[in-house]
Image (tube, rainbow, N blue to C red; front, side, top):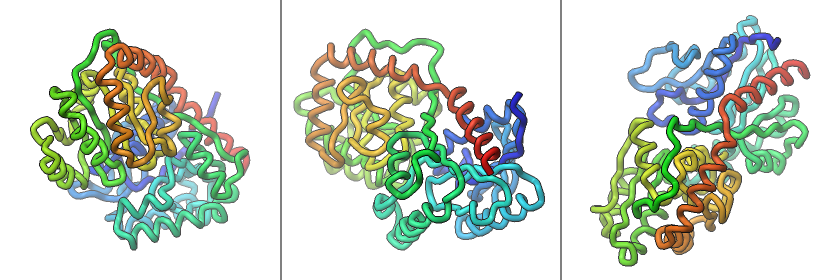
Length: 372
């Protein structure tokens, strides 16, 4: 029988953070399951407005270590101090923003959980001084993470790590799971002419591509409507763009919605669009597929792993508005094609399971501890 461990998880945001995204969903799904199996999991995060220094959620103990300017040095100090005191037996460091470099100071084994690395995409997401710091910090990952094993969520992220100098035999790929509705979604009837986006509303997600593509299709598909599900800093600019493109009346920006409303909107959409320039995997792709909704996405890291081109959706060159419009038009114009892809998307989604992903994480932790 596997033994329980005291686990310290380093991740910048907790699940209640207003900017929480796919990485936080992944952490909750995985480590809440491990906590239910007896592991003692502490999540060390930054502090957001209105949140206290400690919390309990999803079976996890959350320790908020301060606002972002203080968070990373405090996380390093806490990790170094508490691992030397014997408070934890393993550290799981989440590599999806700024690296923590925990192998340098942790006194216990480290497992690096890589959702994705930004690379040059950072310059499109944050001000250039911050982006330069992230880009530079990522350059130190190969020399400073020579010993820890890695677990990552897609083949693309694995290949990125290998290209940066991490040995392939130190990397395990474990795909994200998916929540499957109790009732099978309708995939045998044509859906309304609705294009949907779901996820963080940030510049690098390139939701502007969706709006521009849709604007070029309204004459051919006069009933076309759009729904943007999520919240984030790019929302005001996108609302302005919708007005400038003349599609304001047919575009709905929902902000944050419940899972039930999100699922209802996706299940009633003909196509989900993900024009992001880079993803670790494409969690929202599978969330759409679970509801029988095919996805038109950028042919880029992560998304080319989660979209089966020509079967569960289409892949398009980054930023190619005409290409996105043409692929969406295929699905809007051809009911039989849309139904066929809905069936394939639903079937593809059934291969993703959170319990299996949690088991992968547990095995990776055990191997990290055994090999230290």
